[in-house]
Image 1: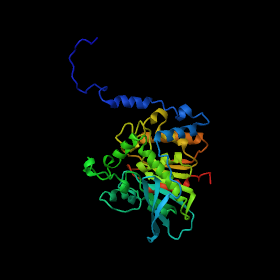
Image 2: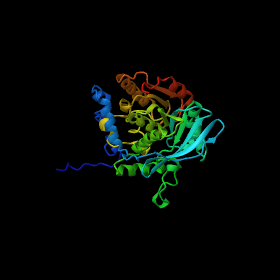
Image 3: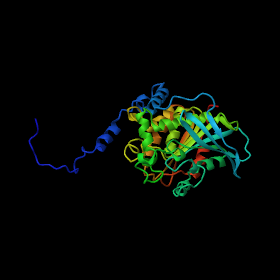
Image 4: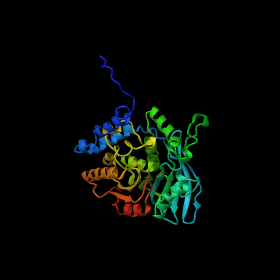
Length: 366
């Protein structure tokens, strides 16, 4: 029966059960995380089981075209301090990936490779230090010219355009879009629609981007000047996220630099507004973000964060790294993961990152 009528108002004051955020926050804290270190770390097959579940949740493409993955190669151009060569590879039917390869001047191959991934900037040209839009100056000023940095450190650098960014951005007709008045790198203009349509197809945009990195490793094998046994990946923000996931699924990656992307779900994407492409349906049923460390193959890992990053609060970074470090130790990889903290916000910290990455022990596999 209905309760006896009493006066009330619909005021939100004192009504924490109206909005979904309160319920969701509690559920995030209490989610089972069945494959977390605490629940499954003693299982000798834990890493493989977690990796298999990650593949399932990411909904990655499963069709890899036979034959050569590289579909077009441009002329090699002398840029003074380095050489530059553009190329395209096919990730899956209907999805080609434009890339720019930078090679150290007069370097002898085969060279170690660094795949460079941007986050929500305006595209891969940021990795090349090129200004195409007004906001690019600020992005490059945050040490995001990864390919230039990498080639200066002796790597062959591949600036790879991620799905939904830059020249792989949304090309639907204007009549289908309601976001054209937003900044060119705003999530709602770049990633939201492809991330949502991927979900309709049983995929995730994260999974598609990770698949592109895997196929980039296939492409590396087709260049004689590149060493397929020494492939690394680095990225900031959304690029760092993909580097973290890719390292869990691709054994050819021997090292990663993941920047501006690290924390527990409860203290980052579960509490703070983040880009749509960060979310994986059902993830917390099985694991938290740092638990993915268990699935990472034999690669050295550097996490680069800003102490004042508003998207990844420092307390959550510390908590997540402590868990990842324990996982590496548990799996016999102590010392192969490190964290450096810059005294700033959501950006890369080149002066801290490169020496720290070089100091990490090399992969134990060939």
